[in-house]
Length: 110
Length: 119
Image (cartoon, rainbow over the protein chains, first blue to last red):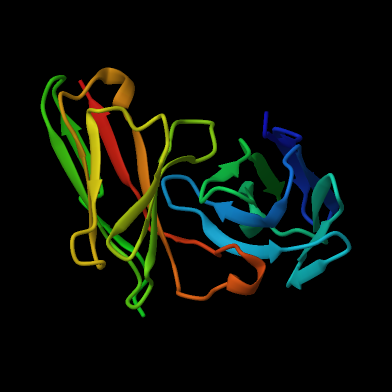
């Protein structure tokens, strides 16, 4: 069964304490892996698209990487405003359906 | 470009009533998706439109649910005979023509969602 698993479920960091979020997937024919940020009561906000193993994307304090089985979202020197739920989603061949993980709830303390 | 808009933002209804939600995608985005999200979960795919054609529906979309995109612009999602289990956030996303086409995938941009509460 095609699955997307995110870990940890929740993460508390001190401001400036770098860490990584994990998204592992068991799909065949990956077309793309997506990272989104979601604030409470709002729709997901697009961050990155990764297409193939070895690819990396960066934006401010965030860096996303992709292997054949998982993706990491690295957060360097986070700030309180980075507090949010981070979602990953995968799209695989043969369908228009995208599968989302359950997210990692990140809290950055000042 | 004002982004994806959804209306209403909140809807409270009694069990058994019908509700309809509207999604206006980013202009010139020909691809449109509907998702449902419950508390603590990621969005679950419901259906996909390319222009006015509905090309895929999830098994989650029971016969009480119907979606349309009559002119390939805005879309509506209707739930008939609502049940308490339908309480959720309903999200709409759109994607531009050709985005990621070479890779066979789309980058989706989400609206703010419609929060449905069924009493």
